Length: 272
View 1 (cartoon, rainbow, N blue to C red):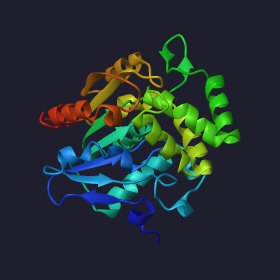
View 2 (view 1 turned 180 degrees about the vertical axis):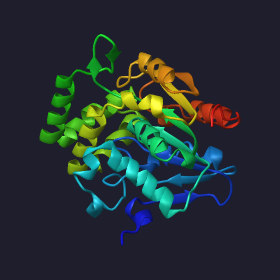
View 3 (view 1 turned 90 degrees about the vertical axis):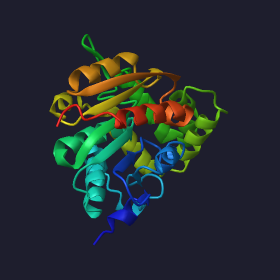
């Protein structure tokens, strides 16, 4: 029998308080939350993990078929919650593609979640004019995946500053590059394809839990208008635009993210 907690390298910080469940984005690991977790150490139990194929997860458990769909990553989240016998009251905090993972998990098991906090979410990265502009043409993403396949290190060095919105030698760019380079290339390519070619726009109206959307004002991956689009589709959501550059405010401007989370957690639920 698979030990889920070992498979996903699960760690729990704290002994009392409601659960904050952190889910990292593509190419990253639970370490990206290191700047955030100290702010909640005295008030919450904090659950951190790595998706299978990322970080220090058990790579032997990686299955191309399962993780070629976001449902595979959703199942990781639900497996972890079930292994810990979590039944309700969980606040999900997801970055980038994990925002979609959290939304899908909440649709599958709404009773499990109290609310969701979405950092840099996008339900679809592709452009579908004239009504939706996710930021990329299909050819752009095919070229990006081809670079990843042909020159993985070169791809990592190129993409990290784009995501960080900073120079190559910045702290966040360096950390992202190191994270990309330490991820198994096969698992990373599957996760990348799943991330960039998923389209979850139709799922947004099905979400019943309240959500906080943290949008980056200058984000190379997610156009500013996407925040408005998600806010319109998610009942009971709050949109907060962070005046930052890049796709990783929890790494580049953690104090802003901490302040927004604190403020949101102090409010009552907007829907049930």
